[in-house]
Structures are given as C-alpha cells and as structure tokens.
Image 1 (cartoon, rainbow, N blue to C red):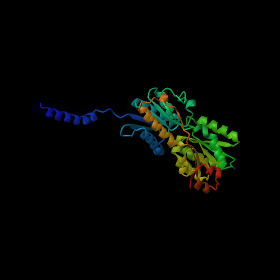
Image 2: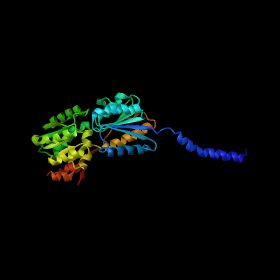
Image 3: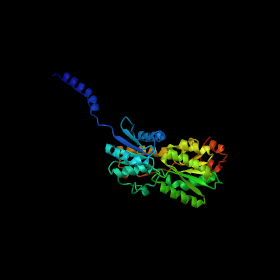
Image 4: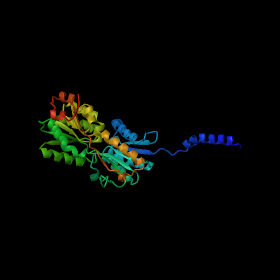
Length: 326
C-alpha cells in the first residue's frame, strides 16, 4: 500500500477509537447515601452535598452516581439499608441524619470509606478513635448539636424570662436520646429551670405530645435536635403556633417555616463539607488521614413576625447577633 493510503487508514482508525473506548469504559463510581430521614424535607441538604461534590470536581450523572437510601424516620430500617449498600460494594458511603446511619454502616464494613454527618460526639459514639487522625475507614463532620442544650435553654430563658416551666420535646428512638436527656437535665439544674420531658417518635405521638400541653401548660418549648423532628418541622411549628407556645429549635429551617427562634450549627454547611470529603476520597485520599471536621458555623435566627404574634419583645442583645426574619 502507498504511504498516503496507510495514513488515511490510520487516521480513520484513530477517529473510531473514542467510540470504541466509550463503549468499553469503566462504570462510574457509586456513592452510597444513607439517611434516617425522608428525601423531601432534606432536599436542601442534598443540594448542599452536591455543591460540595462539584467543588471537588464531581458531578452526579457525569463522573459519579449517587445511590440514595432513606429510612423515612424509621430507625429500625437503618441497619438493613446500610447492609444493602455494602452488598452493592459502593465506592464510599455518606451517612447522615444522626448517629444511627453511621453506626449501622460501621457495623457492617471495615473497608468501604464512611463519611458521617452527625451532631453526636464521634468519640463517645465510637465512630472514630481520634478527631485529628480518625484511623480505620471512618471520618466525617461533627455538627456539635448534642453539646448545645445549655446554650439553647439559656437563650429561651432570655426571650421568655418569666417561664416557670419549659417543655422539652425528645425523640426517644434516637440513639443519642439518653445523652440528650442527661444534658437537658444538667443544663436545667445549672440555671434552676424546671423542665418537663415530652416524648414523641411518630407523627401521631407529635400530635399527642402537643395535646398534652393543654394540661401541662408549659410557658415555652425546647425541641431537641433530631432528624425526624427536622423532617416534620412544618407540623411542629404549626402545632406550637396553635397553642401560642414560644419555641426554640435547632435548625434555621424551623424559623424559616414560622418558628420563633433557632440556634445551632449550619446543616447545609456540614453537608457541603461532606461532599468535599467524598470528592477527596474518590480522588484517592484515605479517610483515616482526613480529620473530623468540627462544624463551627453557628446560626441564631429569630422570626420577628412570630415574636410579635406571640406578644414577645425580643431583647436587643439577641437582635444584634441574630439573623432576623421580618
């Protein structure tokens, strides 16, 4: 064959290579995403997680896939959902919505990287051995929600100084409920504030809990940090509004939904950080070498319209440091 014909054939072969390579390319890595809540109420946090992935140069559907597993507030389903992701042999697992998903995943794999997003103390929970160098296959984001009980109770007293009894709404099916209960009781004793614990683990029990307030007659309400409560924030805010009950919540989304006040770390910031860590691990980083992120972005949000409706005067000391919703 002549040189020109050889070059023509070679060029044709090179032109055909992308199609052949495309048909034989490796499947996209899959991130398992396990959560104790429901997809609808947590859509904003999934969006924050995807934002973190994009910052790490990963886009769902282009160079990664995400396999979501939602427990819909039923903690007893979490272990099987975790085991299912492990059986699928995903590249890594992001566990959000409290400590239960992270603990469930850790119980069934020592090899698949795990990124937790939880408000409980990861050392006390046994998720990691150290914060700076976690070791093993687990790292993540500590939202520092469990240690804020005293701060929230103090803020509620500042807003409702005449409160003689504060009701505390607690989800006893949450794995950290016992720790939360102890912290609330210690915080209340520390400032001499009588509290009454009201338990709720389902929508029906939420209705019953608020119905009990007619007899209990608390002056204010403190809603404990919990993924189920977060997913039912519209229901909880509506029930508190019907009783004209001043309430303090953990996340700003409660205040945006009409709740009086919230104080806690930014969930969106935490989920974004988890997305960044997921990208780094997909790029070759070892979770054992990635320090646990201690979320330090705290948000105080006050819904001034709700305060006026309740006849409350918000102290300037709170207004000056809060994000105010008019």
